[in-house]
Image (tube, rainbow, N blue to C red; front, side):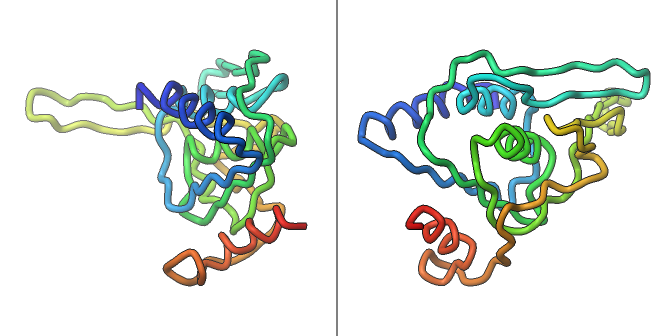
Amino acid sequence: GANAKSEFLNALETLSQNGAKKLIIDLRGVPGGYISAATDAADLFLTSGTIATQYDKTGTVTAWTATESASWSGQTVILTDSETAGAAEVFAAALKDNSAATIIGTKTAAKGCTLKFFDLGSTGDGLRLITGGYYTPSGSDLAKNSVLPDTEVSSSGTDAETDAVLQAAIEYFNQ
């Protein structure tokens, strides 16, 4: 949402103030969100590089680049699954492609597309159309290609002790 960047920044500052050096971000089951929130959050982890590129059917391209304002310098692991989609994929790909995070889990949904809502009148009805998509920093089209994990682990279990993906992230940090 609109407050995502400030909320994320506050959380990262609190972690840093408390001596945290490692961070796990769980994006499993996140169906998307606002592109501005994803690119703003990714910028908090990057000092340089491309965050994402958006294209539309007319050939218009918009690019987001890091502003050298990284707020987190610790190790980061992002957990993904087949329900990680849209803006969540943009965020994960930005950190992975810029070597700011390791991805553990399964491949994402490949639904990095731009949706436009057309209001059809006073009834509240509308139409959503896919009008474009997003490229990762490495040039992969997120509307067609998933973000692949660095370490593939399938989810299992319902709590921290039996969640294989979470346990793999913890083991990664303990190497």
